[in-house]
Image 1 (spheres, helix red, strand yellow):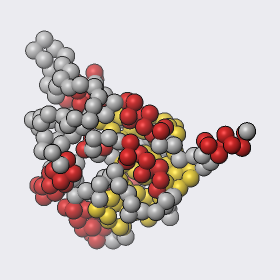
Image 2: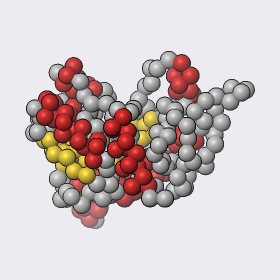
Image 3: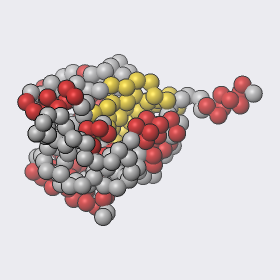
Image 4: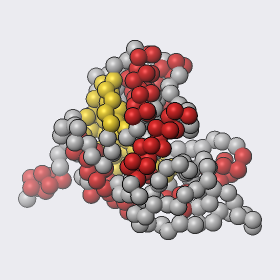
Length: 259
């Protein structure tokens, strides 16, 4: 199945319906956007004048927050309707930002070492392999540039959305492999109308190192919701957030200098 075309249509439709993960920034968010963007305080204290790529991040939220923080923003997304939401929000709030359509595995629209920061919300679950995406992120980042990305945790995608009769959550899906996850009913951890993939820790963390990026920090964003989903989150952290950096000097250059 063509996951690119399928997910493009799915998110075009989700944007039209105002579904989850398609909500735009509100005026109240714009007065102090950095804590919303960056609760871990991983970003520089000011984004003023920095080139920021909001990767696979259309919908009128991430790009608008970055623009409100003073960044020179490019929003890149597969869905034209999600990008339209960014353009409409930029007009509403009088921000300048650029929108580019494409798949996150191919950033050929941008030159080498173009961005100071690549900021990516949960979205790599829609592609079979993160390695091509990581390689492209490393290419478009400037030396010393920062990459902040959030993923769905593997175990959370393996497990049922609802507890088993005897308690606990059964693991239903294999840990690794590039086969799409089977369709799922609507739940807080799956988008039922999309094609999703599970990525192992070897891919999510090791892939960054193989792309030449250095992991500086990791966070499991807390979930404060109540009810069955909140109870599940007590046992299965749904997300992982990673701070990585492109070294100012490559490891190869350091090795050559030392020898």
